[in-house]
Image 1 (cartoon, rainbow, N blue to C red):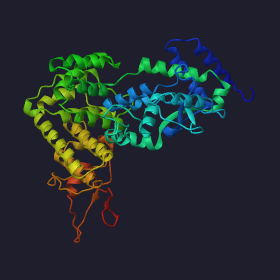
Image 2: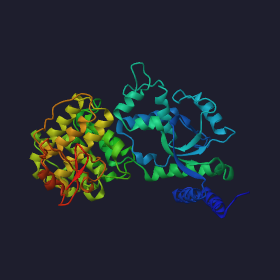
Image 3: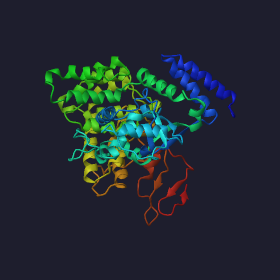
Image 4: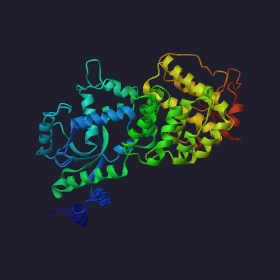
Length: 479
């Protein structure tokens, strides 16, 4: 074959090797194939709109895709959120000029009421991994009829608005699509068995290495414990059994997760919704809750007047998003028993902030960002893992939240913490607040006198003599 390099020969040899392996070794073999493909430009990473993605004819041994399976995945995502870790291997092949995959796929969609409908020429790439997820989103996009009231309108059709309201993560996916590893058309021409190998390798990887993480298991536990169809005395066993069916990554954590949910999960889905929304946008790839942390959470004891479900969810958010240097440890959680006053105060602030977001009509996307920032910062303050927060009160953190939210709010409202000087509110919730610095802006009145406590800024922010501070009105710098 013209243009075949030694790398192409190595890919062919690896494909032959993969064809003879039926165990998990195929995962590492495919990784080598992919690395070689990147070297010679046979595969690339790019974002593709969901309506341009069909399903490869070799997907799932030629069965391609099931609309009912796509709906099951959609229901799971709506219930416990989606982990972006599971989407990082989304893989597809460019559709050849013969339209061979598209023709087979369109014929399949005509026979499956839960699959979205396509027209000839619409498919740009045909998927071999994350197919059901993409097809679930397409079904939502087209408003296909379905029987789940949590996902549908009053007319029984899937609602994009409902899904995106609960999961803001999906807003950019619907508009811009997922990021895909795309094999070029010539890759399949050179290596006809490649789509089969890719599909088998990634399915093996998902079944061997993937499973629901601790954040998703906590959501499952809360849902199971609040299931009204199960007798109260049987709900712990029911929740535990349901979680074990979901292929947990660390099975030994399950009893601690269920006990934590029993104590702090609440009696409605607001805590679940907050965690789903936050993790969907800000969870770091591969992040897990350690066994020690789950055990420490499950053993916490609070009086009924000191229960803090909002704060416990905030702890999980902080673990999901913080840099390793500030990650909450089991010892931090065990210390909560000596910090009940601070934690109770933080719980009250979180409730006030949630009410404030409703009053000020903050969009769902902005609420996830700013509430996440507030909640994770409060946790870092209470566990004393940030040098910048040592001399800052939690009321100052709350005042900073108000200042940030006011910029994106539809309706104005009074600052409940107006008597407290706000700290810098520009830190993103998924970044390490202890290592992020912003420019301090000092305001001056007409007489040239500083009006917003520069001494406090110097004390809290650590600026030294000679540091340039921007003048608020003119933009000039002063010593």
